[in-house]
Length: 285
Image (cartoon, rainbow, N blue to C red):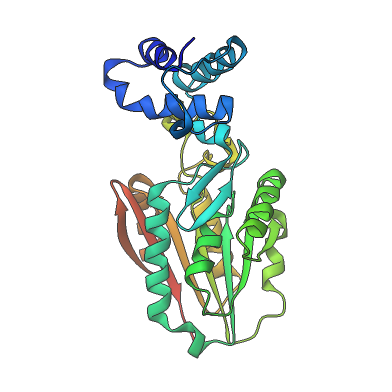
């Protein structure tokens, strides 16, 4: 089948009128299947039967089953990073780039380098490592001990590869080892934690998220991970910390009363739509 006829066939078979703008995804699927960039094709180019079968299979996965095309590509751009991803890691979102930019600006304004001898940066639920790696790129002038923490060993392997690819060294820990960070502290240590923890319930799951890892999305209770992390820093009497959370509107409304009751310093910044950045701080130095 000639290339232009194949594109027309796939467009009519897999895209509704409202989805016609997704023609770029069809072109990308063909590129992936035959390992050739679109700019090098000719309209009259023939696509053989085996390639057409593979293209049809991928189109069905993406347009009918809602399998993310990013997992087929395996590599995505995130800010200035090139990241490997797979179904063990979340697909990085544009709003997370906004989150990182806001955190970067806030950390810069605190002038931590002049105030503390040791700065420990923690990314809880690191996944592909996108958050900590991009933030470290932006804060490369500040000496930090960077730690990525995740419940998934498979995700930690991907984060390690991305650390090497982007030449940004990080320490990676399974979540069960989080207590390690309490050792060898001094009064002039500050912790910066940034996290986009799971905050969706099963009822809130959308079909386009079904192929992304449950342990990175689902929570038994909206506030579960937020409360766990906040309590960790409060109960262990850690003197200096900045906690940054990506959080949705529903969860935020549940968290705020507890913060007020316990007289915990916080502020809220809008990111995008109903997504917010929650900053929680305690600076004793």
